[in-house]
Structures are given as structure tokens and as C-alpha cells.
Length: 48
Image (cartoon, rainbow, N blue to C red; front, top):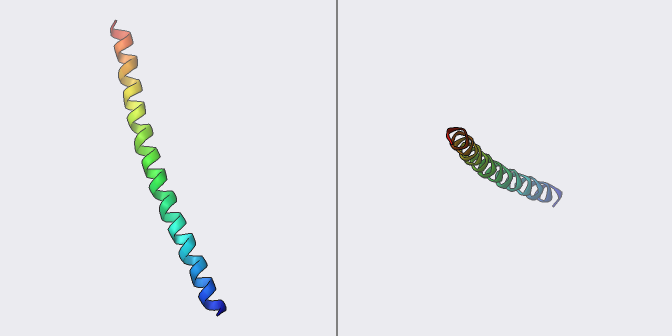
């Protein structure tokens, strides 16, 4: 009985980790895009 409970806890943790990693990746790619956009804006301002 106890062993089973522990396994479920581990599975929950694994799922949480997977979700967190996905979120992190999404956030990272989003911030990369934002940075690129920001750099472009700065260049545009300089060329004006």
C-alpha cells in the first residue's frame, strides 16, 4: 500500500517537472523573440 502511494507521488513530481520545463522553454523562446524585437526597435531608432 505504502509503496504504491510513493510511486504516485513520484509520478506527480515527474509530471510537474515536465510541465515546468515546458513552461520554461516557452518563456525562454518568448523572451528571445522579445529581445530580437527590442534590438530591431533600437536599430530603427538609431537610423532615424
